[in-house]
Image (cartoon, rainbow, N blue to C red; front, side, top):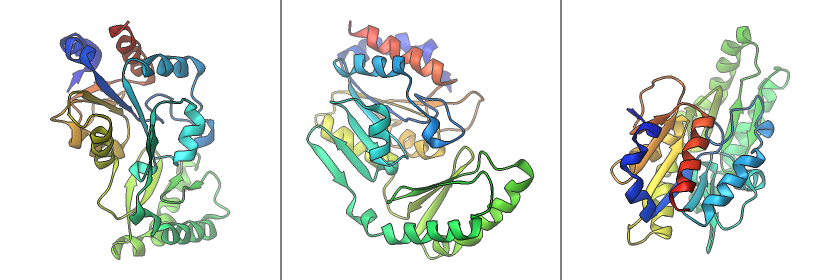
Amino acid sequence: MKHLLSQLHKFQKNLRAGAVLLLDYDGTIVPIARRPELALLPDDTRKLLKALIGKFKLVIISGRALSSVKHLVRLRGIYYVGNHGFEINGPNVNIIKSEAKCTRPIISDICEKLREKMGKMKGVVLEDKGLTASVHYRLVERNKVGGFKKIFWSVVNPYVVSGKVRITEGKKVFEIRPNLNWDKGKAALWIMDVIDPKKKLIPVYVGDDQTDEDAFSALRDRGITVVVSARPRRSQAKFFLRDVDEVKAFLSKMAQMRD
């Protein structure tokens, strides 16, 4: 896997011709925060994204609920993909995957049981996002993490075994999603078909989390896939950037390409 900033000159001509930037939110354009509500988009990053809108197609693709990521980014004229691909909104697009709507009661039931079991456990942050849920344990004391995981799996395992949900473990977080044939990768392909039906634009996908691997796989042979990671790791991405600052440096270079 190669460092994107050192290889970018090789793609400049093709990128200048047109690209679609698909960017994860947490850990990609903003640093991972201790609590989800603290991961605010810096003003300079928002200005940079705004500068890109007139030059490239822009998609923010996140595990957050659509309403949350739209509130945090606050830019018009771009596409938003929320809840790991189950919600998509943008110019002439506004969909919620109908299959995911049917699983809302299951997600709600799991969240209710987790609250009952973990009610007094300090540091657990439970996000019920309607179509999916996230359980953050970054603030749980190290000697309590094992107990937290034991309780978590005791609640969700029956739903996993019965095929109702699937669990992905990210950076100090468990993602609870409907067990459907849909993910960030399929959502990325879908939105690319909407934006670029003639397949003339290069998709550039940048993400840091395990759920982004689906998109790396889906777009690997079609575009530029970039994992954000300070340390070498196994990934389906072709390139890497070390951190949020390098992502900003990359986006700045993209903005300069079409000045």
